[in-house]
Amino acid sequence: MSLPLSNEFVLPTNKEVGATNHPEPDNTCTYLCGNSLGPLSKRSSALVQEELRVWGTCGVTGHFGTHPHGRGWVDFCDHITPLFAELVGANEKEVACMGTLTANLHLMMDSFYKPTPERYKILCEARAFPSDQASNPPSRPYAFASQALAHGLDPAKAVLEISPRPGEYTLREQDILDTIAREGTSIALVIFSGVQYYTGQWFPMQSITRAAQAQGCICGWDLAHAVGNVPLSLHDWGVDFAVWCTYKYVNAGPGSIAGLYVHEKWKETELPKFAGWWGHDPVTRFAMPPKFSPIEGAQGFQQSNPGILVAASLLGSLQIFKEAGMMQVLRERSLQLTATLETLLKQSKYFVPVEEAATRQSTKPAFTIITPADPKSRGAQLSLLFLPSGVMQSVHDGLTGLGVIGDERRPDVIRLAPAPLFNRIEDCERGAIVLERVLDSLA
Image 1 (spheres, helix red, strand yellow):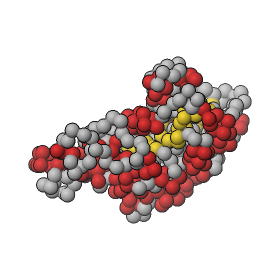
Image 2 (cartoon, helix red, strand yellow):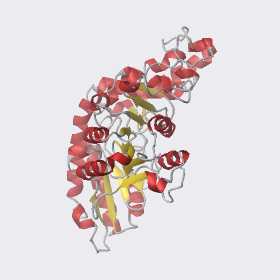
Image 3 (cartoon, one colour):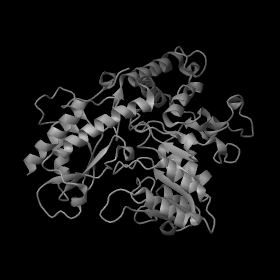
Image 4 (spheres, one colour):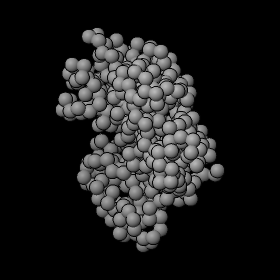
């Protein structure tokens, strides 16, 4: 299949997204927000409709051999697992289709975060997504902070956050590695986002994993913004565990079923503590034996049977990834799109270099790009920081009014992400032209 696959997706019209100022309300909008919620694929829509019909015509017998499409609900995720494994660079037994992102993160931390008096810290980036990060105040029960509290620790001491240098917006690889080397004997768990949600920085996952493990730390990854966005090789990189959602670049639908990875080296030592019947050996699962016998690998962590409608939506999207050539092919297209958008944005009379943004005093509207300039250190997303503080919301509203859909991150950032499956060069051109027009109106 040749890219882009715009015709394989249902993209909203300008009228449907509230683009009240667009002269062609019935045309498709310029959707540069796949980093936040991917659009509906026609394949996903068709599979969900098929499963609804099976539910209506087969009832409970759809769980087994009478499923007319050969996707019995008991084994439904067997169709997803090999595609998941290929998407993240893992063996099939190392991945599971289950749960939600934060629930899976808690399951993994319960198994891998084992603080001792000497080794108890969790190392993360200071601007981790709130569901992960210890927030301010540190006692707020988000994942890292609540895990520390569950072990009787003070999150302010247990959660070690690393920040960019003054005047910078992204973390330097050397600063991360130096922190691991300096604090390593006190760190139990190193956990970063694969791609940072705010800046779009793609962290050097292999080198961080290697450095953490060399210090005796466990290394896990939150791949919410990385899966379906950048090539991953979790098994070969030796990553201990990872979790991800599927409603961003994977386009599986709002709140869709998530994914989990556990390296095969842990299959004998890290067994699920919170056992559920769906993680039991499928040979005897329905016999309901008194003793839990987990499936080998990541799928042993499953607790409940998956929602088939969300799994069908995920399967449809993953089939498109497979037919498109998976991440190596998509990455080439992604690099082209993001580089094009970056070049066009930097031609704007309102663009200022990132080095000047922190000290700029002018009240005229402007923007810089805080995503790394090096393509090897970013995915599809570009994060635009608007100046002076407070102007971003007007820019965002102006873009939406003209049919360009990005994603606002208050107080001052708009994220634009040309996704290679469905975005075109024309979308990048349209986004840059409309941004210039909006800034002209504000100036």
